[in-house]
Image (cartoon, rainbow, N blue to C red; front, side):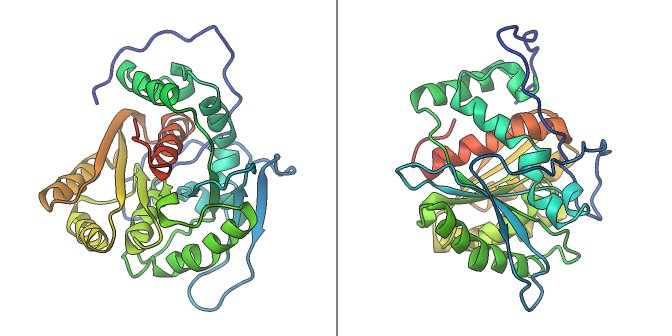
Length: 313
């Protein structure tokens, strides 16, 4: 998607106060410079958030903690697992679990989706006029109705293969999802369950989600930390997943994302191999502000649409 000149800052309302964000890369991959994140909040969780502590498990799972956004209400909600980037992974389990809420400003993103129309500043002035119109048209046709969102600590694994991600995948599938569904009253159907993440988290979302197509109906990745040489690996994983169950699959990158060429290479290989998916390229760099703006908006709205059986923008 080509960049376009954006309108000046709207005076209709002030910007939301958003916490700093860390979207980062994996080791052995070229990575953009990371601005220092603001200190994460250590106060009580806002209404709707639950702290999920997990007892240590045997094997290669490692320490774990997660937050769960469980808005409540009469109807059971779809469930999204959202994975953070490496910046939070290296800062520890507690910081990682709070990454989407405290560092990525997820509460502010959700508030804007509940009160459309979106304006350019809601996406950090990193959206074309066309894309902003598409997002608002979707919200106009079908108001955002909410999701439960689980945000576990995302480990920075030394083994970056499919097999290397298997232990984390078992934690997500066998421990996190049942706990989130029990405590959040979420829908249990695979068609109402998605996984996504940014950078390091985007990579793991692909590895875990496509390894478990019987569990996840939607798999997305924001600026995933991948390499062009891994195109065959990801395409093979996706083809095998699709042979078992159809999965809604989307890759998102940005014009100044250093992983863009690799993401395009993977998309090209998926297309060559006949794997249905969407590739979205929006303006912006690979940094905190992008996740607070288009990253969070695109992730949440796409999954909420897909997991409710609606057409995404």
